[in-house]
Structures are given as C-alpha cells and as structure tokens.
Image (cartoon, rainbow, N blue to C red; front, side):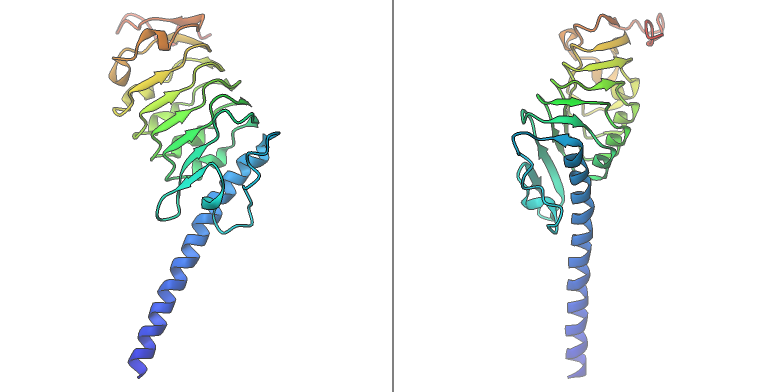
Length: 217
C-alpha cells in the first residue's frame, strides 16, 4: 500500500511541476506580448482579447501556439495599429512568424529580435519604422522571409544577413539605406528591385573594390 501511495504522490508531483512550468512559460510569453500591446494604439480593438490575467496567451486572437502552448505566430498585419515595437518580443523563443505589416508602427527595430532563433518570417513592411537594421538579425539562422520595405530605415545593410543560408526573400526597397548592395551568400540571387528607391544605396557591391558603408557618413 505504501508503495502505491508513493507512486501516486510521485505522479501528482510530476503533474504539478508540469503545470507550474507551463504556467511560467505562458506568463513569460504573455508578459512579452502584453508589453507589445501596451506600446501600441489599437483603435479597432483587434487586441481586445489580449488579457494578461489568462494563464497563457494561446487563447488570444491573432496568436497561434504549438502543442506545448508556446507562441509560434503573431498575426497583426493590416490591423490599423500604431506605436512601437518592444524588446520583450525577443523572449518569444519559439516564434516562427512575426507579421506586423501595413500598420503605422514607428520607432526602431529592437536588437532583441535577433534572439528569435526559430523565426522563419519577419514582415514589418509598410510601416514608419526608422533607425538601422540591427546586425543581430544575422543570428536568425532559420529566417526565410525578411520584408522591411516601405519604411524609414537608414544606415547600411548588415553583412551578417548574408550568412543566413536559409534566407530566400529580402525586400528593403523604399527606405533610406546607404552603402552598397550585398552580393554574396544569401544575397546572391535577390533581385535588384528589392533594393530600389533607396537614394543613397549603391551597388551591386564589387568585391574588394569598395567598402560597403560608402555614402553612410
């Protein structure tokens, strides 16, 4: 009888530990997303379901989770949002798709987005984002789609991005980028029109003949 009691106690302990761990993970991811919500103006109330009092954000609209209740998608494209991005987004370590295109988001791209090691798609196009493209995005070794076009970005295109072997689509057109257009690594087959309408951007880059940050001073 004592052995059975011990087995039941062990099973209950494991179950309780699992629940506590899932809640902690949910709280962490929910806190990160709620920080984003607080930084955004939402006149159409698309974020109304983002209730920080829930155990995890997997029940929120525009948020998708995997079977382990980890956030894998945030879909807020064309949602009439304004405000800015927050560094807390870098805590969503299982996030694969961050879709915030066609809004009125301002401010800069947080360097912490470089922590999103599972990210496949980063779509921030058609906003009013300024500042530089963080070199830390070169850490996104699963990234396939990087669309930052139609913003107010400046500075050079980080060469770290050329080392992402999975990267297939890059669009940085209609910004104010400077320097030269990368031609190595993942940039080898990116069409030139994905860089157009950056008045200070030169290229394509001639290897060994020009520094990439030309026109950036």
